[in-house]
Length: 118
Image (cartoon, rainbow, N blue to C red; front, top):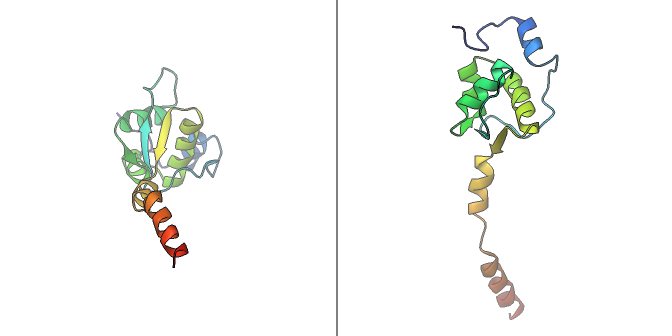
């Protein structure tokens, strides 16, 4: 059984993406974690179905590209399709980590009051 993406024929990649060379979405970078929101459905493009199966657990875009043996740019196009259809969600680990480092708004208010009292 051949896994999707093993055929490195450029015509195959053109077909997989419907002739697109770029994703319409900027939602996916290399470390974005992708989570499937549904199971594959009959008749779905094989690469889309494989992505949904792999992403039952959060999976980074770069890992997906490796698992599918496809260029990251192609995987981003496929993910954009699935994201637009509501079949996957994107989680950005850098955003979550940086939001944890923001100071508490109450502390900021207290600092502001202290500065005004000087």
